Image 1: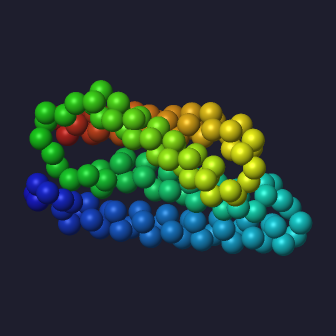
Image 2: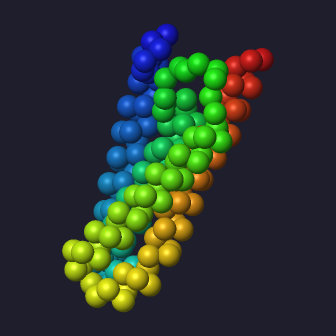
Length: 148
């Protein structure tokens, strides 16, 4: 196996999952647009597209991880706690940068951004921790299955 990247089977699985994820995104956006045309508005315009995009990308990443097509082979000396802490720190810093950019860009008044800063930080950090936990659980299960 190639130690630096994905092997051929992993690449094919990654491409297949990516294609299916793109088609799912396309159909969900078309469904949302059709429902919006018929007068059904579940969330206002920019938020509905972002929610659909986030949902599809989350499903894509989870399917890549569960299909063992996310990362190539690696050595056994992994540190899952360090990965989780680094992921959480990275997601908190990304959320902080987003909040600062939103404040400076003037998209809305500062009161609304200040009210949303805590949920943005919490959701971003929680998403990073959930992705790290799901990755760890799936990798541990795959390593246990490979050992049999």
